[in-house]
Structures are given as C-alpha cells and as structure tokens.
Length: 190
Ligand SMILES: C[S@@+](CC[C@H](N)C(=O)[O-])C[C@H]1O[C@@H](n2cnc3c(N)ncnc32)[C@H](O)[C@@H]1O
Image (tube, rainbow, N blue to C red; front, side, top):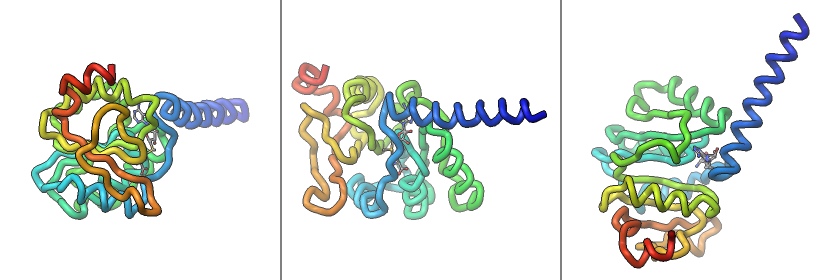
C-alpha cells in the first residue's frame, strides 16, 4: 500500500514540476500580473462586451476574471500549461459560475491552439518565444485584433502605444494584428 502511495505522490510531483518547467521553457515561468497592470491593459485595448479576449499563459486567470466583471458578455479564453494556477483558475470560476459563465480556461499549449477568432490578445511571456509568437500572430490574427504585451516589446515592430512606462509597474505595449503582416516587420522578425 505504501508503495502505491509513493508512486502516486511521485507521479503527482513529477507532473506539477514538469508542467511548470515546460511552460517556463517554451514561454515564461509563472509570474502573476499585478492588478494595476490588468486595469491598464483592459483600458488600453478598449474591451467591449462583443469581444473575444485570449490570455496566452493565463496563470491564475486574474486578467480574464477582471475582464468578465467589467464586461460580462465578452468571451474570455485562457490557455495555460502550469497545472497549479490552471486548477486554481478553474476552481475560482466554478465558485462563481454565473458571474463567469463566459470565461473558459483550457489546459493547452498556446502555440498549438488557433486564436483566429480573437479580438483582443494579452501576452506576458519571455522575449525568447517572440519569434514563434510573431509567426503565429501573422498566420492567425485579424487586422483589427488588439494585442497587448506586458513587460517587453517586440524587437522590430513599433508599438502603437506604450502604457505605464514611468510607473512602478511593468509597461504595456499595444499592437494591431495587421502590424504582424506588414512587409517591413516581416523581413526583420523572421
Ligand atoms: C508570466 S506568466 C503570466 C501569468 C498570468 N498573467 C497571471 O497573472 O497569473 C506566463 C504564464 O504562461 C504560461 N505558459 C508558458 N508557455 C506556455 C504555453 N506554451 N502554453 C500555455 N501556457 C504557457 C506559464 O505557465 C505561465 O503561467
């Protein structure tokens, strides 16, 4: 019996550590976005009730919960690979199911999930994965999709706006989907 418990414990710990490590390697480690930054991001993208918003690496789901509180009719989809914050977000949603009925959390790799129905995309990932991300955006985003990036801008694509650069929090960078297809950006970003 003890042997079974040890195996279950080992597999559980392996899965938790593995999921955190994989996310950290291909995208970014889990670092929650601050409340103030979430408020600014939602203002910057001028979120509407008719929008579909994605959080790529949604962590504990805070951004999407805030979006749903302010705009209850918007569709909010979070993609996350680290099992602990993902389960926390699922639990939080199920405790207030009515309020968050348009919010969905999926245990998926953001690079393998099609987001072509997005009106708004939020990203807080490490620049190491930007080349792959830019390729994905070029293929999938519509011209008018608003993309808001926390912390680090794309190297060769000029943001339409920079928000909170001189504040105590990480800055935000705003882009539109069409920018990922413009010739001058394609040549440089690969
Ligand atoms: C900097 S954190 C963002 C946290 C989130 N904004 C919050 O407030 O909790 C980046 C998240 O992206 C997740 N992640 C990294 N690569 C991913 C991938 N390929 N697919 C899905 N999630 C990924 C990580 O597990 C991590 O939780």
